[in-house]
Image (cartoon, rainbow, N blue to C red):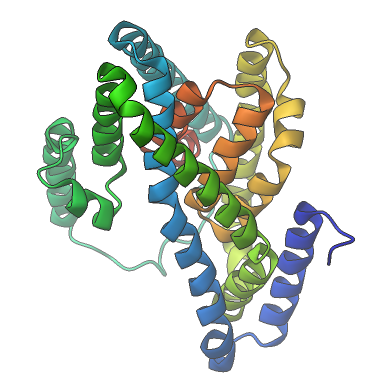
Length: 312
């Protein structure tokens, strides 16, 4: 497969997975043999995310070394997240009201549920939102590492990076260590990504074999409207933002094409975070910005999910 780029390899894996899943639809043997392959790939990705975020963020923040600059970066980042997320909600609501994707769907086959379930869920959500800012500060950083609590990890890494910068020369050996960790973990990421086509093949194969392609037909209009709204958001909203930033959305898509296909195929944006960070640095983004904005965006800037929820 060396003759093909990673993006093409992943697409081939995706198509083969759909074909195998469709051929063996309803066969439990597909899940028995393929699911472990997909699970191993996802585990490999999750294994490297935390070390990369910690090392990259510490190196980036220590490089800034200025609380005032960091405050400006944090303020601009949160402001951007708020504005773009709000636009995503508006786009989702507009598409929902114009195209009415749920119209005509037979609801009789859906399970009836007590409305109290949704009320309880909403109450829990409001409480969890209120406690989010408290939980950013970890009680035990090692517990945050184990649980993959990204906000707590980011908070600790920012403070640690500032601490390294504050102690000056004495902090250089520690900074050098984390430089080495970051470089080593990016190498590991490149090796793991070679397994991506096989992981995608297994994950898609299991999904199609379990649910079948025909299961999408009743929801065809909803699926089409969701994809149309997301394409509009990418090329219009993000296109304008890219233009303001001095580049183009097509340039960004070309740069991240492998990661876009992989995230779509695995239904996991977490699987591409390390490579996104690496590529954005090579593209010219300062390490301090990349290592802070990308991981934070995974918690605060979920535009695709926001748009879908507003539309559905």
